[in-house]
Length: 238
Image (cartoon, rainbow, N blue to C red):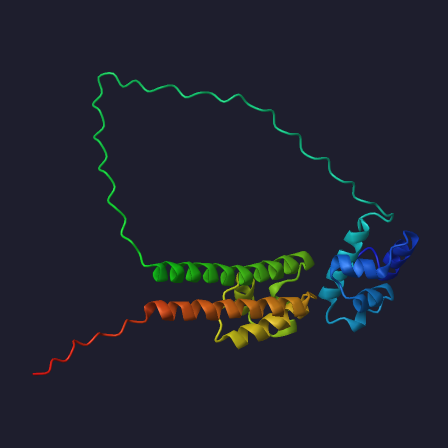
């Protein structure tokens, strides 16, 4: 049980003259949810776990210590002291007297020239594959960080959104191949992001961008693997 209520946080916010819209923008909690918290209307939220997580985010934003009745603003920690510069020590030269000389290295062979078309194709594949995976991994890290921040257990998540734990973990890894198809991944991602009270629209736009880069990567691989046509010999007429 928490030591503070939403009405207490409302009183603290009004004493500091902080607009509720500013808190909603900084904490990424919808304005309607903050209003319900301040009115102690917890029944409007989906679960007690979410209510506890939102109250914790709201209290941490105001600097409230739930173990003390008074308001305490956490001081800004002092920056760590800069390390003293150390004088580099020059390594001792190895003694080579009486030791056999190393064998000379063979001269490198001339590089084989690669057609410009093949080089451009390889570069395109590397770039699109890196960008496609990077987008999904970034979205997954945001989901994982939000879940840990709200301190919600796996059993509670499965009960609320009816998605197996293995699928949720795949979303947090950005593992699209573990799903049946991209549409299933999209549906689970939308449900999970809405449950965590994240910006669903922004996440879905980035997911669509990742799918587009994935299509470009697949098409580039197909073009590179396509075999050239066989040239027929000229027909000789007698």
